[in-house]
Length: 155
Length: 443
Image (cartoon, rainbow over all chains, first blue to last red; front, side, top):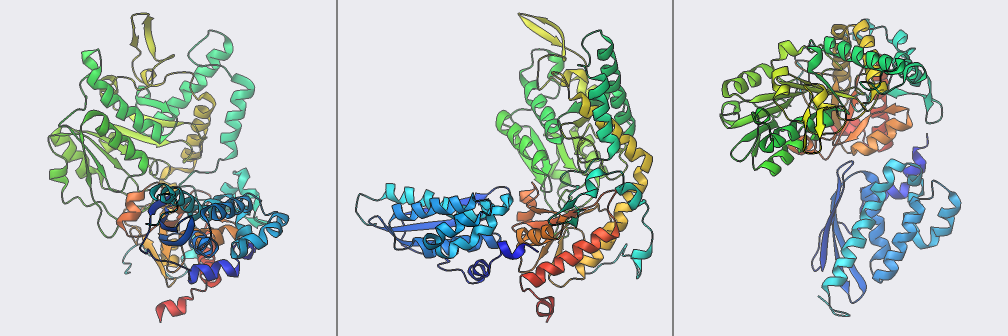
């Protein structure tokens, strides 16, 4: 059974006890992203304090991978600048493209923390989109939030 | 959930299936391969696309190796042979559904066939020839579909309505997965130009009662298009008994190659429709000022056709006819009864669709409490079991039943009780893996 390589305990923990779940005020941008091949959905809000991500709140439905991914992302991005958070998103994308190459996962372990547990997903092309959906939503919402706020200002 | 009929009694598994599964499996090369670390392939996704017997693969290879040429053009020997094989396959397929040869149009697939009709109806409004305007759809007209349709028999009609200003109406569903015909008399009315309905649901498995729908459409002078993508491969279908104007289906879901489908149309209706795609093959006379078109079926077959695939589909039909469609249907019904019984015996499993085999085909969709269908599918895949997960290109259906997605198993001629047993054990394995213990679920 290779299932354990995908469903690490960390992933199942995030799935069962998601961090930061629920939609909260205030926020500068809200986006709704879907995975049209399977119907996974996430609604995600971003609240900025200047260029810092003060909060990410979300509701969604979908498989364990998509739901655990948004929870792990919440831990990684809140309190960081949009630029840093999106750079971490790029690293997560690199991990998803690694096709199970453990060297890539080892290199990114410090930066991605719990999210490095998704390395096993990269071996299953059909599931990569599930893991990436929340990061795509964050990228979209951050761009909109930045556009909606005056430079350095607060909502 | 109560189950009242067609339930196999104790020892159902000992009842021999109508088809010789072991002999049939030997005809399908792909079934001898293994998946995911050496596991036997348990293919329960024929509803998405079927596997191909060797005779179909051989027919395609033989066409390319010995007869390849563009049909209906050229006067050389290969062109004659290619044309002969192409038209012989048309005759075989026409015979399979009780149709006249000139009523069978080859398309890419079901989706292409539906679009061919939908675009013909909007093109009719602006056709130069008065004879092509008979079925024109425009403002004030209505198109009727059902909430059960695959996107392929829904989106083209939404688009037709957007192009023409016509209105889309639909028949709803009952809680037990049937069409709700209570409003049939008002939804289908004198403004209705066409009713598009599936014969067998790809997600619920429901076999629809077409007689009252066809009868009502006849009363008001509406055309009827039947989506046979999930019925023609699995049960005997005879267009003379159907009473509809169009029947559409795909070759790849009935043991044939991808890239070929069929639009059957009543000849007098086809003959009154303008073409959708235009170009070579479908013309009569071409001048710089304008062109005239061939009669059906050539009018709807623009360009060099998918000749090898058509020949392959002919071989697939030969294979199915040798088995006998009555036996194919009985075989799948026995498997469906067994699967419904076994799956519904698992605490936490809910079948989405009719719970018994009355007016029901072999698409069995279900949810497992506490586990998303993707995760169910992943565990099954790890065990070598191929199923479909998601919304099955019928998003309104899953929305209607309040679930985000389902896991779907579909059966075919090579499916045996051992495949169903593997599925049932796989669902239990998923429950164990995700810690959703059935005992707790029923406590």
